Image (cartoon, rainbow, N blue to C red; front, side):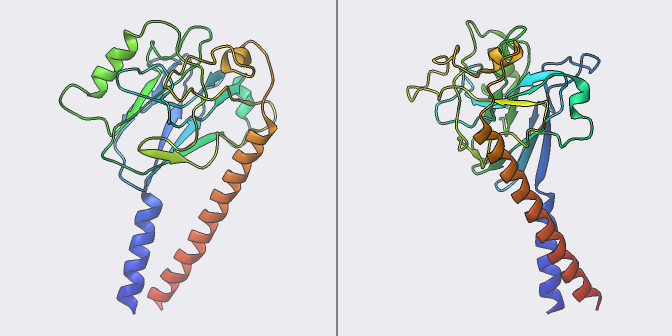
Length: 250
């Protein structure tokens, strides 16, 4: 029985460890500048939770799934956090940092993503891109994806992706959204795959950067509920782990 309990604890610890974090946006004094994901790429196995933390302040960014060949346009059927506007650095003082959590569902597929913000200039072509499980050799490496983004012509698409993407899925938009911060969403990405269809949609991230405040309350509420669920899940895990450890010691 003790061996079974020990194995259970080991499995729970492994499950808890299957979490990775990517910072969304940075500060002017950060090496690499404001427009970046830190780290820009990582590898994650099935079941891993990748948490995107919106810590870049001031900033207005999104985490939007794209494709290798079209890095700066939302992918049809891809995930999207929505834009998170953090107007100033002290906006995060004493509040919970907004996050967007995705769970890896197919680690055999590379996941490409970018920030679709346009203000003060498009973030994607200047380096605000990222990848999960990108090939390390061949033609579709992260370096090649980065080059594709730099060579992107036109305006990055402003369409809103969903929660379930290709290779990973989320359960909620970015959140929680405390007072002073704003979550914006746009019109859905067209089924044809064109992410540029809603570049001027109401509530877009571009409008947000100009001062428009049209944050959907339902999105904020959904994000908060998801955060509460995650907190409850974490508390439940702690109780189970403590109980099992107590049993082994006994």
